[in-house]
Length: 205
Image (cartoon, rainbow, N blue to C red; front, side, top):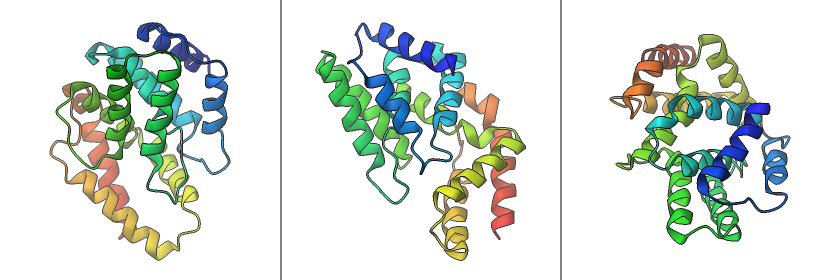
């Protein structure tokens, strides 16, 4: 997890701020909560790795990277408020660090963009969304593992209900033309993501 420690220091350095005491430990504990199987430190580490490779695409690199740290900071599988609560936590943390209001608001909006419910014209939001969805274009083995992890997070949902709802989510991603916002992630992930999604939809019937 050394890449996460480097990411934490780099993001705050790029913001020109010092993080509130204990905040990194609080986030680490949050991503380690027992209800998490996909939305975990593994996911955060994968997102950071993608960010490092694509950070030149960011307009405000520090804001995108700190938004990654907070984008799943709150995660309860049965809640529809996770992104909002995560965004509010990030905004409060930035305010405590004496960030400018415009920076607080941009990070807040970045995190809300990971709801994946609306297209954005903001370049940083488009990049962040692509990073969050890069898992769809992972190797078939990692994509299969991801599918199993998500299923465990929704373990209380009956199999027939889960299959219908999960299929709808995956078909929604397949219907996007293109799936990824940036040419970088289209080149890296688009073809594999479509293969992965089509195979998963076929299995779900």
